[in-house]
Amino acid sequence: MDLKESEEVKKVVFFLKEIGIDIIEKELGETFLPGLDLGSNCIYIDYNKLLYPGDILHEAGHLAVTIPAERKLVGTTEISKDWPTQGDEITAILWSYAALHHLDLSPEFVFHPNGYKGNSEWFISNFTTGNYMGLPLLEWMGLCLGNEKAEKEQKMPFPAMQKWIRD
Image 1 (cartoon, rainbow, N blue to C red):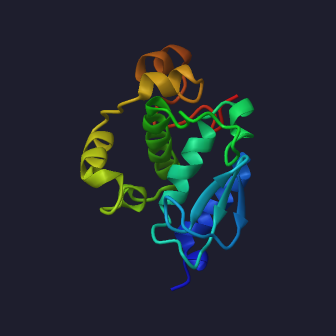
Image 2: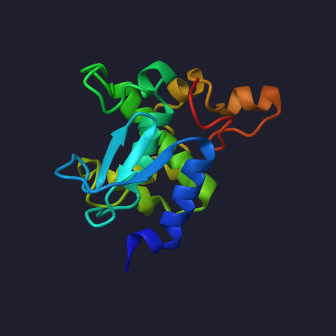
């Protein structure tokens, strides 16, 4: 089956475009994740090489949690050698879980057995039981609210997001 035509991929691509992350189809060479690469506020996808469509959401998470000044440098030699940091990594993982929840996709879509250095089940188990590692950082970025703050402000707590892209 052509991944580009799968309902899950269509749903993800529509969502990402809607929140301001461009999707650009392009032939790619060797990349860290097969069929995916990041550019300035965009994700390059080579559907002929893409193995795990859920990786699109994880990569979108990296763009979403990066400040705008750095987001426009992604994919260039000007981006910090430290990008993404460990904090960026955990918040991108948590962001992708929120996106799964929002799009009503199964956790296995992003947290597939061939990703996350063999820890996919661990992430699924933690997130589905409400153990959200990195939540204080994602909340500090202004993207979501933890239970306490959400209750005070009478808003929905994580995994609901207050906004999808960091300013």
